[in-house]
Image (cartoon, rainbow, N blue to C red; front, side, top):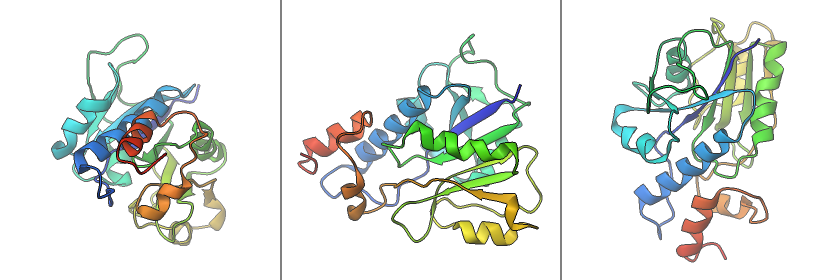
Length: 220
């Protein structure tokens, strides 16, 4: 049986609406992404933070959720940690088995996409049956990735991936063959004022972000 892990990378955000306190904004985004991960089937889930942001993980994770504490908020740091034992937020249970070695596939998704559909994460993992790496671009942005997924052990050609700066073409250029990389469906992240217009109030979920934006008079 293939063992899959999906990790929300709760990195520092690049933008905060001026009407909202930065801590409140980061917490709402992270809470919605973590809540989304809790709805996924046939995968294990976790969050990754640096030591300075451990407070954020503690504020939003569900009991038993694995928290990876990483040295830098990068995809590479998360992927490198997934083969080592991590520290759960609480003792492991039947529903949250003790983490450690044995993952076959790992996906890392950005922590500033509160309305991300679960199907988009599924599409990021699906190509790994035939390809070693998949990336999802940011919709409406020239640079950045929504997420990246890879089979373990990692291919040696995989470059360092920064979710804020990487682009699929650069990742593909590093591969020995273009077919080694799958580019899957993208989605928007909240990295600037224009991204707020991409939020669809008709979509279910993203309750924390929705409530915060409505309270600030940004979202009707």
